[in-house]
Image: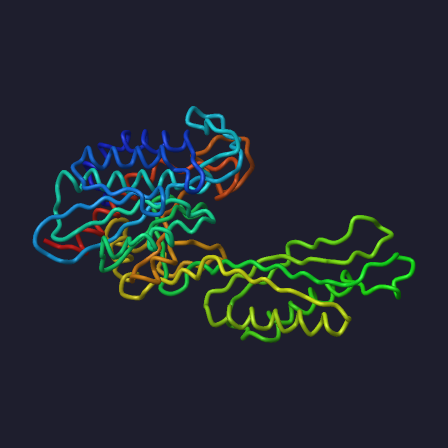
Length: 396
């Protein structure tokens, strides 16, 4: 493993930043303290700072030489609205707020790279450090783009790095093409005519109709899309009625759809609306379908992903880089940046959980759970990756 010695020497400083952010988690679009900390650090290293993109986003710019090429590096800053079970000194100070996805580590790794680059500037071009708010369901990447991120700070490519529990510490991974799914939600409201449950023929039963619609929707996955096109359609909510002896007027189905392509998503949305309408008509009900598209699929471009994988292999060796990681049905709003610029969303191993406190369950320290903690042992590795990526992308 070829870590940058000077970054290793600043490990304790980077770790202190990470743990400070972990102890003071802030939810989406509330990252004021975190943004203050990031901006203060960048300015102290003579890096140009712009604030307010996407409400609480921070952008740092570092220039050197005459090249017009530029690279964007993104780290997310927000926490999750869940309680923390850990009791270590840097546990969350705020009830029901927690850095359970490692955004504290992502921010610290990028700051570690920024500090090193500010001292050495061994590149030719422009580095744009993007500290993004509201990744957790808030579309912070989209908000920054709408505020002019890439118009004000044009880049040739953009990259992101996310920790991955279960992947051994000291390893990296990425894949060309779709690496995370689109995230979408739906609500289907079926309207009938209420009646006494003992005389159902006097009414029009929306609950029975909702059950038929729910069964019919699964045919989209098994009979309409190609078997080789991955997709998930999950009904996660069914709401109807208040009394056991009353057929209600309205029943509601809700859930999520995940796909790796927009074409498959288009198909599913179209078929859902047709099936819901036809089934409701068959049972004398009316229906309304709301289909909300949240995050698009995260799709890595070929050249930039191969480039990133090469940098990883130079650092840790080919045996410790997974070049075709399994895609996940999770979603990521870095996808919006990849719609605007080519780039790569990559993974850094967070280990099997040995770094966390014991007593909160077996197995890897998975994301979005109350006993998660970012693995500080990989901070220097992540910062080294950012520096080497920049040096190779913007060679002197």
